[in-house]
Length: 255
Image 1: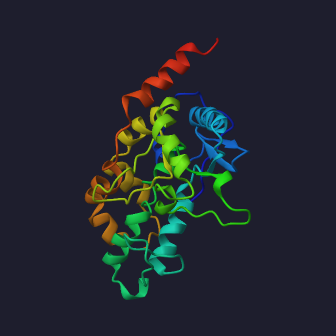
Image 2: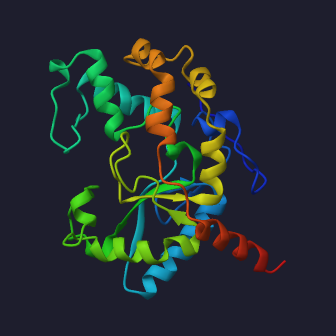
Image 3: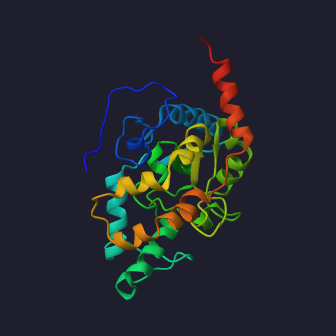
């Protein structure tokens, strides 16, 4: 599937159906310092948050930002076929060949979004680490234990709890709500993400998947309403402070 691109887009414009489902990248800009792309407002806010974290001795780095539909489709099909790691809720490896199609779909959804339904499509979401806490040469891994009290990113996690909302960010996967498992590394820029969440309907997902070579397609389409309810809608809502902080920032910016 060809992903549409463009040179410019008015800031604050609502995401189109193609942008919401990762089939266009007209709403994101490159962030060279991170090697990823984000929606322009989210990019500006992340840079400001990174500077604030640096003042407190934390090297906040985004290791994942915008992800398009085709990339998410490749991840999904790889996990379904067993060519990518498939994990259970406790992050233990599963043998895809030992599971039937419905079990594979259920296992994938624990840690990976359905193509078209990933928050990373919106350009509002990113995964972050504290680069300073990562040993030289160590591979970047996103593990819940690293963000716990005794983990390598404990200081980052505590800092985010105290300050992320000041820059418009929050954690959508803060706890288990019966769908996606907690992801303490995953941040969402509220002013873009909340409207996107409200706009991403089951019908829009169905249209995005129409004609796509998705492994487990029949099962997914038969469960699409439940998948939307459990794995798209069942997330934390942004605190009012995250939205208010951005509103104040834009109101006070010099003309």
